[in-house]
Image 1 (tube, rainbow, N blue to C red):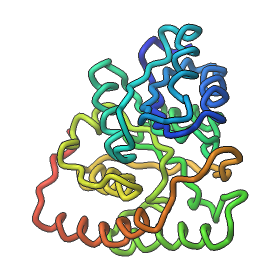
Image 2 (tube, rainbow, N blue to C red; image 1 turned 120 degrees about the horizontal axis):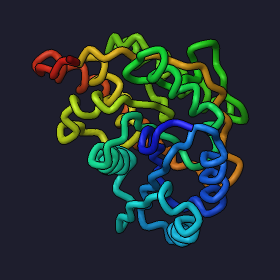
Image 3 (tube, rainbow, N blue to C red; image 1 turned 135 degrees about the horizontal axis):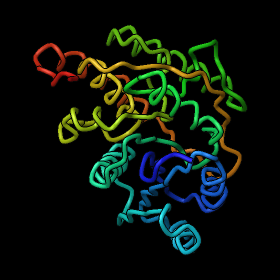
Length: 248
């Protein structure tokens, strides 16, 4: 068991009633002793009620921020980052609620930051071929080529730029000006990695297998994808005129 308040896993939720209890129990079953912070965006399906019930059982390990409505993935994570920094966590994780990210991989992301001294570790679908299960081929190709496109435009040396399974060391989130992160949807993931890279942090990809959700519905749509396509060009353009704080 690691020391108290070492690592926290931030899980944004919207209508995840079918998954939320199972994912919480799966994370807490790991030996490491992770804490969990749920960012709950006013799900009408009662997700928050399930979390509240589990908070009685996991009193000092399970936390929740409730927001009134769906405000975007990016704002959910930034709210979570601020909370985690205020509560002195050293390793801050992003993970989906739907088991597309395997909780068993959390210790591997932790190991990359804690033992191999990465500042950011990314659970990568594409670092060793294409490791995606149960996705329609069109979506696999869209996601894969989106990542290649981002690499091309930004020069980021990362294979899976849109990954949402990430561990940040505390100092990365302290260095990045979270107020200046502009994207709300999936492009948020690209912007965070790009910014961390520009700040000089060490980023490491850890190969994972991504499994499409079995329960509940995907939040992906074409407007989210459009934000990523055009957002990346804006991101690169902005970087030419912007001074990034440097990792110390």
